[in-house]
Length: 409
Image (cartoon, rainbow, N blue to C red; front, side):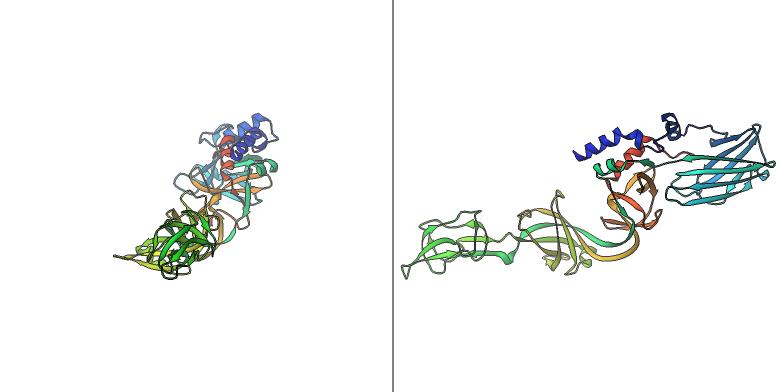
């Protein structure tokens, strides 16, 4: 319900939240769709009297870079006769400057135009002693969302920084009873069962009377009591039975259970007692943490082991026989920059996060390293200390896609 409400809120305020929200609708629409005059090379055509400059970003099989084409009275101008510069001002305050040199029939920029291609652009060109300047906005993957709406939608940000990346082994396992808290309770002396006071499945307390037996020799009655708090798993007697050797009751204390994880091959070789383990139920709704207590060989298999983990079960959520998934941390590595995996989204052909500056959110294309299911190492595309959306990032992506803030030059 919260997610549906969040989407509705974002839709209601879509116009106010889109880039340049205080502009006329026609201007915002034109900007989003790339509706501007284009030149012969499909670039943005900038005019100043009879002089025109076509701005393109060329990225076919090469790193993205600027190419400029100059015209006078609609005819090409020799690139060597034009002096041009471009200044890009990005959302986070970074400024990129480009100078240009002649190459073929165009001017080529002095460096790569780093993703995202989202910035305020200032262009300067001089030809035949006359200087022309232009400025325009070229945004992609950018959207503005009022703080109140973002909060109601559950959008949360964190600061990108150092993290510990775990080297994990993922295993499947089963919940089993703790054998140290399991007992077969019988009569101390042979006799006749005179009363049975509990039923199968009943919870009992330590010292509670389970049954009363009349001894054959003494003809006196004595109680059979519970050795600990627990649950009656089995009741194997009735009034009038002869109590001899064998268990009359089977008791277990389910407040603590074992998780038996099966590992084989290289996974088994990486396991050691004491390694931390994260455990999840098959539905993913129940989680617990523990450590490997011991490694047990599997009969008939020299490559398999059982890794046994003991976890508390006071609320009874872990039932014997349940199948579980587990992550065993077999090593760790400190990385200088990481983000939470929950913040990652797909945008065009990139894996991205969305950064936050005030009420504006913008895409960042990432280069990634190791990951452990919680954090992922960032090797490029993001500055340390950047605020990024760690939760509900899909709402930002949906709003950007809806607003049409696309990749266009």
